Length: 601
DNA sequence: CCCGTTATAAACAAAA
DNA sequence: GTTTTGTTTATAACGG
Image 1 (tube, rainbow, N blue to C red):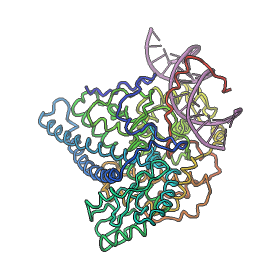
Image 2: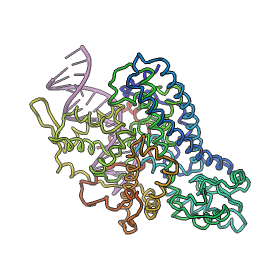
Image 3: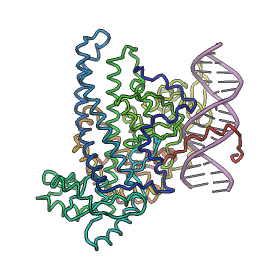
Image 4: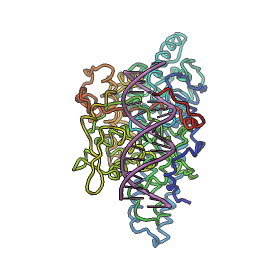
């Protein structure tokens, strides 16, 4: 059975599967968002208990992830050793051992998945996370996506004010509420904080309810996710707190609900999402390894699209973006050939977690951020391994492919190869994107076909290419807004990001499994995101102080090199978010019934 | 609301 | 006859 399903990649054509797995539905929550328009999510009401629970889960999820990574690493090593020879002849014993280990691993993965899902769910409920169903993924997207820009801020504001009122009443502290939610932990409160779940949900908050909040802390009196080893673990903080009490004090005073905390919280969400993405990737690898060991036998080829087969399908764009939640792939995605793939096993499903795939739809171009070729190159590593939909337009990618070639010219097939080589995302749904590539080549004047001895090659007319790009970024206002605020705290955030990674022991990735491009990419992605946003709104980069941390990479600032230069402004790429992505899905196809069109030209 | 850009789908035609 | 390569047309989603 494992045939991997890979075969079906090609199907794409029609909307076949639609519903596909139901799993996603949970999360997607029905389109949660989309957005802006109605920001109201279905407000579910969640109790504080839920929140606390969710938070705990999040933590657990992280821990589990950590463990998984470690194990995975070990496993990889193991399998790596054997794989070479594996072939048919391999001693059954070895295989069994491996299999056993993998099984255990799978179980863990499952567990983790569940945790993640729950976590996501809770976040969604809280309104902190928006999920978009189909999002494609971008490196950032995932990140961004998760955040809700304006709404979040507003909420906070509301919360704040509300809470003020409450304070009068007596207890609760708002500040923590959100924070907690975001970050995860529950707030300690002896004092009484409460978390109010609702606040987030819609715009209205209902503030608290004392009862439940206590759960978490009470249960774990001194264990606070934000406190450890006598130090405040708030991202970027590290303030020393002698005891838990002082820590609480510190938390309330230094990390109250304000723009900074909001921004940091956002970043933390991104971090979590990113980690989840990574985890998904590794899971995918594991799956491929397993497939290879068990089924294998196919040919060695796997090269280009090895992993995909298995999970790929599911993944589609979203991997990253979707990250955590995204899983939900939109139900819509009819197009995506999802196929049943995911068969049951958890492992596979894992991938599905994030994924989704709706192929179509733009991943939100909405937040387009100008990206230059340099940017593309920068995140190369990332896209090579992550099945994230690159935030670049086809035209930009095609151009990049051609320009990277020595002769500055490529045949169609070479362009295809470049796509698959450089982007994991394009290892699947070939029919779809290849068609898009051809379409772009023909459509845009900037691509010139040159007859050659042995066929034809495509070249780029830079002048033409630059001509068309008026569009510039345009970011989602809300996002931008948020970003702005984040921007101010950029530095600390970076540090936070790093710290977080380290803290979660993700170092694994960096060194071992992932090769670390991840961090860097993430950073740059964020940077770009910020940049784009900033650039758009106001160009005050002043604040962007040169950060300090190693993560500087994240810093916006220079990246934008010549804002004016059209080149850079590539277009829409949405690094960010994608948040939206509405559910549009497919109704498109229905039009067949009657051709009505005239609105367009 | 109109326009321009991009993404998808698809129908076709011409070459391989 | 099938596949690949190119062109085109139609839609839809967005953002300005």
